[in-house]
Image (tube, rainbow, N blue to C red; front, top):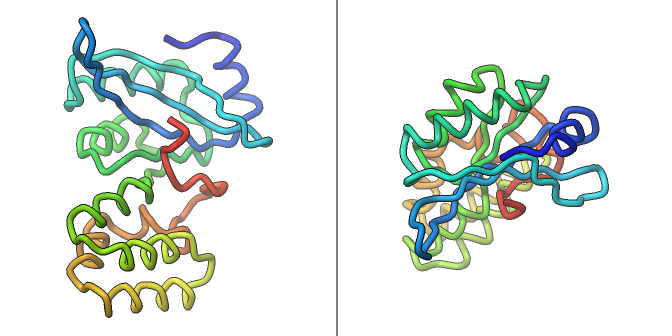
Length: 181
C-alpha cells in the first residue's frame, strides 16, 4: 500500500534515506508486515509504503522492494537501511542497484549484547558507528577490542562501510537506525 500524497512527499520533500523493516503478525492472519519509513527535515516520521507477505524470505522481500521501486523509483543518493537480514540486503542490491545500503547500528548492537553478554563493548561500538572522524572511530574500535575481540570481529563481518558514519560513502542524515520503522 502506498498513498499518493505520501509518494509525492517522498519524491519532493524528504531526505533520501529509507528505513526498511518487517514485523511478524501473530493474530488470526499470520505472516509479515513490511514497512518503509523516512524522516522529513523536521525529524517527523513519514511512512510512504507498507506491505504484507507470508514471511521474511528472498521472494517476499524482492516482491516488496520491486513494488517500492515502482512507486518511488531510485532517487539520486538514496540510502536504504535495514537490520542485517540477508534477504533484505540481497533484494536491495538487486533492485536498488544504484543506491547505498547500510545496516541499522541499533539492531547490530542488540545482537552484540545478546551474543557476547557485554554492555561495555556495545557502548564502544555505538560510539564508533556514530563517529565523524577516522581517529575517533579507530579509538572506539580499539577500546571495544580490548573488551572483546570476538565482538568486534562479529561487527566487522557486516563490513564497517555499511555501519560506520566515518566510512559510509553516502549521507545518512543522522538516520543510523531503523527504529523509525
